[in-house]
Length: 421
Image (cartoon, rainbow, N blue to C red; front, side, top):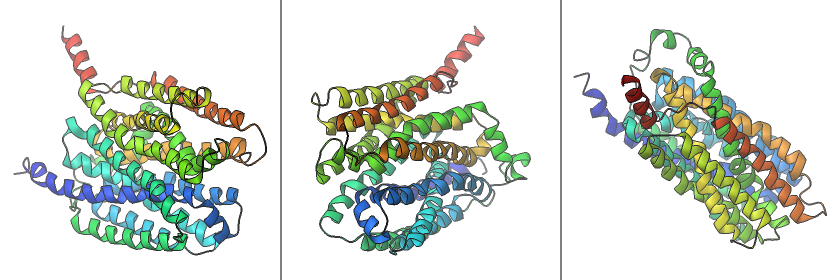
């Protein structure tokens, strides 16, 4: 009977995973939408545009740290109450963000980051329970695809709404109420893992920090997190925060065109994440697809800064987004590089490192390039400098990828055959 239990319960985890995808979709809407309402938020909070960007960036502080808590919660208590708590916190954060006050805005944004931290680890946890190992990377890629669809919607859809007169207060109230409804839907559909602790090894389950001791003592975990963070940063910092402003100021695009240009990067993720996830599963290797995607990202940046008239920025940004789906591959590698009993903690640690990188890079980018955006200077040179900034980060990710151990099934099987000869 015990052997059949995972097979019988897997469909319920898949149903819960679908609602988890909705939570993750909202996560990215929340992450991306402020970029298209910076003037409105600036007026509401009575601060400058740089001040608004600073508030938006506080999301990543709590997001990175709370991922560690989310990982522990998932491994010790399962997904049912962990995901409900995270979604409820996000909903409250959205409701607070509409209040036209600087301090409630900061607190609301911090709550948004804390709540969203439960979304991706929770979805990966549910996917690992509902899908077989051979299709897990594809499921993770599809999860990120839905997230980036939310990021694209946060600009593609919300941008025109704001331009047509929707108030930012109404947007945040509506999103907050909807998110709380999703929280209760997750509570009602997610299976309860009553034996989640007994299924783990005694050493892991007796201490809340023991799973992280395992994950963080593994050098491969750090490599995965840093690589993913460097590949994520151009999307999370540039496309979802600064992109609209940079394309308006440096490339002289209209608000509508700049919004589309920025939104096409996360839209590329919608296709790139499942495509590259499927490709890694198909060939049984992680590193070639990871490095190949990073190289295409660099080529796309070079084209838009050196040969801007060769291809439309819409096409280039979409291709860049597809290629940057490679940032999700290390999420499969970190799971395959650590014991099964720390699945949730491994993903939590991964997000902590990944978005810790974002938290570090964001103020550096703001200081070096963001603050000078509206200053009278050579706009082409300013945009080129921006491109070089991201090329340096992506190039570093490629170099670190060479140190990463291959974990794909195809590589493992090849080595096993070689060792038996």
